[in-house]
Amino acid sequence: ENLLSGCEMVESQLLPCAVEHLNAEIVQLTVSDITLAIEWLKCSYLYIRIKKNPEHYGIKRGIPRDLLEKQMRDICVEKIHELGEYGLIWTDGDGFSLKPLEPGRLMTKFYLKFDTMKLIVKASACCSLEDLLHIICRSAEISWIQLRRNEKKTLNDINSDKEGRLRFHVVSENGKKKKRIQTREDKIFVLVNDCLTGDPLMHDLSLNQETNSICSNGCRIAKCMKEYFIYKRSYRSAINSMLLAKCLDQKLWESSLFLLKQLPGIGIVTAKALKTAGVDSFESLATADARKLESATGRNYPFGNQIKESLSSLPPKIDIQIEDAGNKQGKSTITVTLSRQSQAVRSSKQNYVDMIVGSEEDNMILFHEKIRSVVLFYNLGVLYGLSFSPDGLFCFGLVIPAIIQLFLEGLESFPAHIL
Image (cartoon, one colour):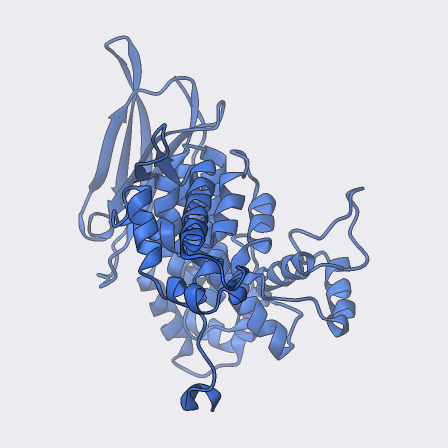
């Protein structure tokens, strides 16, 4: 009512997130030097409100105009210095010219906050799944989640995990499970691990809403980490980021016993019934009799036929051949060939596959390329071939984002090949 009647002024919210907006302007090449950055800031509503109500923004009232201009310049220079310090933008020796770098582009592409991007930039090149999950738990995107007193007992019981359901636990410095959850990061870690089992114990409405937010934001952060580690050519961290993004998107670990929940018409009750009947994977579902599926789940005809038909939406099976092509110009060369082994239903979705070849010995990505879904789904016979010349030991991995969205059996690792 006060806003509608004009009794309350609307203050600018730009200052707390000025670094994110400034980075986006630099990425779009709207701002290419500090002078333009200062002019951009002075054209904002923030500048108008600072002049009208400086105390709200931590500036003394009655400050001379020239000092106010200096304050704005200092704010702008400080934000640019922070972006340059973490390698998100490039500045020349004088700090005048500004150019975007790949980490800054990724921050803008995935709408990440600066504090979250700092965690990613500082991450190790050999992050495990657990390390990446801890980064997500500390991210600014879900910092609004708080630990309430009445939740502690439930969270403590889940983390104690007497049945061995959880993949990771909140542990103390001595490596043992924590008996008491004491921070919001611990709470987030427990919630996401409980969710990814596929059969969560948490059924509180408020906690379920928080878990959904953790998974949706966490998936976006994990996709950014994937592209960042590919840019840094960090093999292990990139592969683990891909897997984590896939799991958070489907709210299932890739090793979950309830992978069939990803198919339409199959919930946790049906998935449990199928598991009891020995059907717990896409392969076993494809070979199972439709009438036995209906009997095991207590569902009527034609439920068995419908869930078997839903398997047709799976991407085709891919065979990958790795051959030593001998020496060319003094370098060992290998040839990687992708061939489709089964037919696939045409899909209207525009997806791609990430093909990665990496060296396990030095944790280095040797080759990465995105292949369009039209090549994967529609072409017959040989889908893709490449030749390159790495050194030492390497391991090949194929990750399919189309499967990330729908199916979890999308990461294939192949034995190491020595040249």
